[in-house]
Amino acid sequence: NLFGDVFAKIREDYVEEVDDEKLIEAAINGMLSSLDPHSSYLNPKNYDGMKVQTRGKFGGLGIEVTMENGLVKVVAPIDDTPADKAGVLAGDYITHLDGEPVLGLTLAEAVEKMRGLVDTDLSLTIRRADQKEPVEITLTRAIITVQSVRGRIEDDDILYVRISSFTEQTDSGLRKTIDRLKSEVDGDYKGLILDLRNNPGGLLDQAIAISDDFLEKGEIVSTRGRNSDDAQRYNAKPDDIVDGKPIVVLINGGSASASEIVAGALQDHGRAVVLGTKSFGKGSVQTIVPLQGNGAMRMTTARYYTPSGTSIQAKGIVPDIEVEQAKLEVLETAGARSEADLRNHLENSDAPEASDNVSEEDIEAADILDYQLLRAKDLLKGVWLFAKREVK
Image (tube, rainbow, N blue to C red; front, side):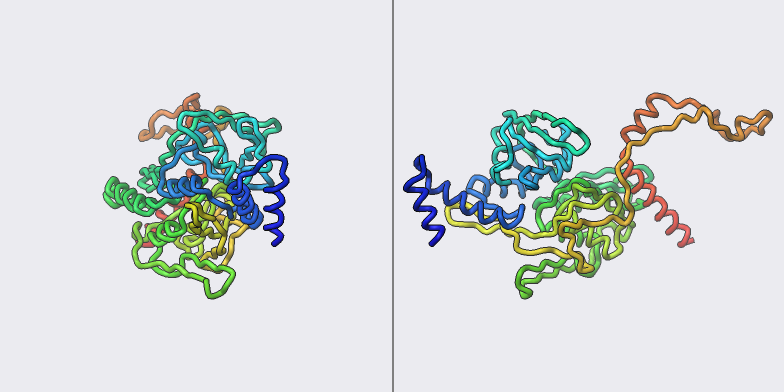
């Protein structure tokens, strides 16, 4: 009755004529957005956009976002998109879109403003933690085609696979990538580095499938809603696509939701060592409920728990080995002394001539090294060498 009274009064006496549909949509949005940052109303346009996005192709900037303190917070830029190329970073706060403040908008409204026609520009005003002044970035909208799985062979026969998001194609993409990399090394490799850094998540069933790819048995994740009867458990089936080889999972503050399910499952089962920094901490499950008029609502319906029964909501996955990302530099070694500097030292007939000089090229190459990845490779090499000695 109260709602009806307010609605009728607005229609009758508001200073301008109002659109009933917009009023109802705003009211629904208000109800849902007051619950938590991940619940919202999807009008037909946004609902279609969401369906396209989970299929792995959509138009926009390429940023996964959430709402925090009334501002749009970047969870992670998607690889090789306008946002990624322009230098938008995980943790950035978007305060203005084309000079208009974000404060007061719902997350769905802000996302709608960021989407638009291909080849049109949008300027973002960003507040960044380590900078006093706002950062202005202009992006050109593009068709965002998400290739969610990429892989390559790292030095010393280590498989490296990066998953940038969890779409309908992620599990099949992972299996194809692993098969291709195995064939490149003739099946002889030391282990796998699974890079989930800045992966904002996606489909729950894909997170379960990816975890199952590396686990032979046991619980992957459980979800618990308001009613205890609604609890669901998802268990692994026998089939490890890397044949029991050691795994290192890389995470950071941009790893959220589905990424945390995978990292938590592999960590709790002792199947992988998790390395990096604490993850984002989104431990809730959203259900999409279609509504009349071709719209839908996204509503938080459950929390998810890792196999050990831990909820990471607002806490995140804590890595087994904490490694901050760092910039590596080659230290000047001209002043250091060794046996070779001593007068009349014995020569090593097998060794090539040594040089004290460090070139500019060496320093530049060191500057761009991925320190977390470097540590992950060192860890895998150590595990492989230790296992090899045990076999002997």
